[in-house]
Amino acid sequence: MNHIEELIRNNLKDCRIDLIGFADRERFEGVDPQHNPFSIFPEAKTVILLGKRICRGALRGVEEGTNFGDYALFGKNWLEDEFLSIACYDLVNVLEDNGWEACPIFPNPSELGPQGVSVADGRPAPNVYPDFDYAAVACGLGEIGRNGLLLTPEFGSRQRFHMILTDAEIEPSPLFEGHICDACGMCAQSCPLGAIDMKHTVEVTICGKTMQVADINYDVCKTCKNGACANRFAETARPDRIAALCNRTCICHLEDNGLVSNKFENSFRQREAWSVGNTKPVSERNVEAANVLGGSFSKDGNRGNR
Image (cartoon, rainbow, N blue to C red; front, top):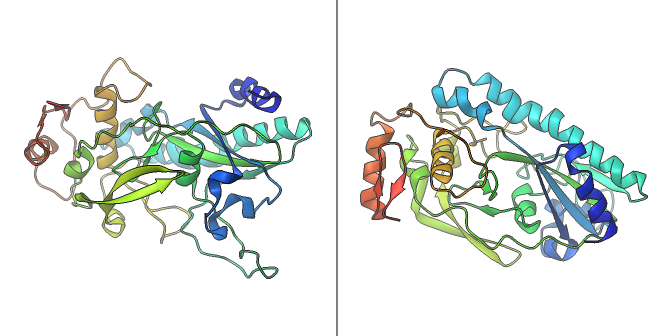
């Protein structure tokens, strides 16, 4: 650990950062300049990705179907716009107080197209929006699961990220070599709209790490009334599915099967999950999933015979 990394890690608690990872320029070679963070700061040597958890309680009202607004604030809008932005800003100040330039980057959706014209030949048009899922994998923080969401070994899908580009040279974090997603198929089977096709997958390779991602119909996801919500920055971008039934079922599975380290006294799902758009209870769809995947599921959605 070099001096600057030690400095950063010593300030994580004060900046209230739960997750952090580092990647060098080499890990972004071949990335389209329109989505490459080094297009924003060409002299930078390191991408820092920092994250804060989505507290599980922020999802409680969605799980019960009784309160959606507080997740939108504590799990999404305020978390990105205020809590995480302050943490990012504070860490930028730590770096700049020690003589390193640091450029904070907000997680705008990478699906957004250019919103201007190039200022010179050979430069991408403004604005450059990096792919944060790519960056999270490149920074060694986790993997993309079959459900298409970034998963970390600490929290599964329950986190959001900001990025910092700096001219400080920091040793890249080791890539995450394990697996969090066990391809149980519960996300697909719990989706009331049938938007996740586990039988057809796409290979996603980032920095030599290959992941299988299900074929997901995001146009169908955008119509979901089970906790998914439209991307607040662009209607054309992928919807936010962290609070959707598919991912809440994933959260239950990861926790109940010991696949994430953030543990709780009680299970997240205490009763039959509600759903809109499918008349079969989730528990009955779980039994159908067992027949397809060759395992067995208990009524609460846990998979056995693994």
